[in-house]
Amino acid sequence: MDKQRLRTPQDRSLWEEAKLKNPGALKGMIDKGLEGTSATCVLAGYETWNRPWVRYEIAKSVARGNGLLAVYINNCNCPRNGYSLKGPNPLDQMAIGYDAQMRPRIYEWFNGTWRIFPRLGAPLASWPKWLPIAPQGQVMQLSHGAKAYDWIADNGAYNLLHWTHDAAVAAGR
Image (tube, rainbow, N blue to C red; front, side, top):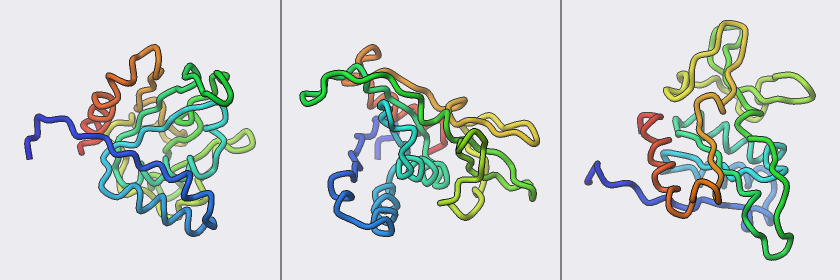
C-alpha cells in the first residue's frame, strides 16, 4: 500500500439502522462500525455532547487507539430545520485521567463532576499519543489533544480527508 496516499474516509454512521435496535445491539453495531478505522470524526451539533451513544463511540474510539477530531455542523443548512445553534464540543465533555490504581480511564462530565465512564468497563491499555498527560489527580479533556473544525468556515468538503489523516497520524495509526 502506498503510505504517502491519504486513506479514503469511510462513513460508519449507524443511526438509521440503530434506531430499530435495542441498546445491546446498538453497542455491538458501534463496536463493529469502528473496526478498521484509524480516526473518529465527531459531528458536533447543538445536542451532540449530551448523547450517551455518541459518548460511547468516542470512548470506544479512544480505547482502540483511534485519533479524534470534532467538526461543527451548526452552520450547515438543514432542509427541514434551517440552521441550528452551535453546541459544546463533545470532546470537552470527555476526558482521560488515572484511577486510584494509576490506570488510565475514560471520564465523562456528568451532573457537574467528572466520573469514570460507566459503559467502558476496562481501563485503557495506554494513554493516547495525541493527548497530553494529565497531572496526577486531574483529568485531561479530549479536546486538549483533538482538533475541532467548522465544516463551513474551514471548508470541510475539501479538508475532511486531511483532517482525518492528521488525526490518525497523531494517534500513530
